[in-house]
Image 1 (tube, one colour):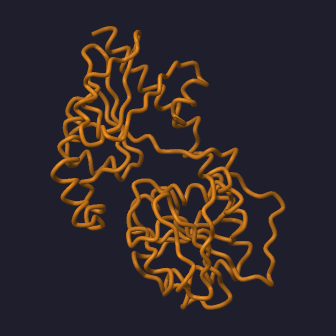
Image 2: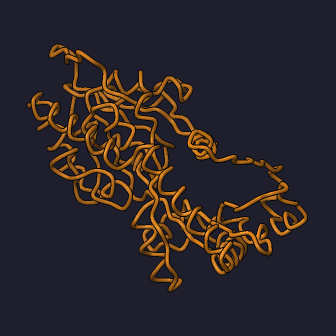
Image 3: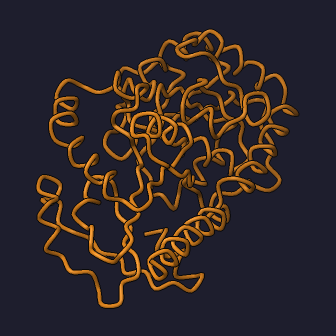
Length: 321
């Protein structure tokens, strides 16, 4: 939807189509769907992309989560692995074969796809609304309060939520870890250490206010296709604490926009948190650097311009054979 809105703002006429969830299990049935008259190009996700291959119309397929990425597969559950390998993989591989252009939302996803597929894969990063996610002007930390860390995501091992209680114990009372659940699951307040606090779910429009209420953002995820939480934090002028892994390390520069420890090294993560808490100037510098990096790399204008250039390239090839 955000892509369609951005394309419309620069003069395109995108026709966004939604389909019932049942098509997840029978994407081939989407072959019966007729594109609107005058369609110049079709852009689809990898799962259903093959079903939208139409003679004479270029097809762009975007991959948001490459299920065969070697850094992702260890984090799948048994049932999810069977589902991916027996069904989803067949669908996405068909889409890859028939697409005129493949796009990945991060370079580390693109690299894995290129290695496996032997095809060209372009990287066009996801983006955040830098007007909505923006620093809080006149921000001043109250030194009498604990140093507040924010975790956003499902309370799963994949996201590193299993490490939060041990990290809270290492940090002690001078710190508070606020936990906001993701789209699928929320945290339960019961049983959390005293320095951890479960936040009530909020609407996406309220998320900047959540970021403005903390001092740094905690991203201990073990795998990310694209580090959305890190980018949102950086857009709001906050330093990031996390692991040097996949999508997080692609969007966040260690020592400049945040501090990234080795995977599962919570002792180092705790030490980095203490460094930030003891040095407000360091927090401010990293927050400013993060905002600068987002404005340079992860804006709507940059992503839309890249898609616009790709669309024009493909339609020109189609017109001239």
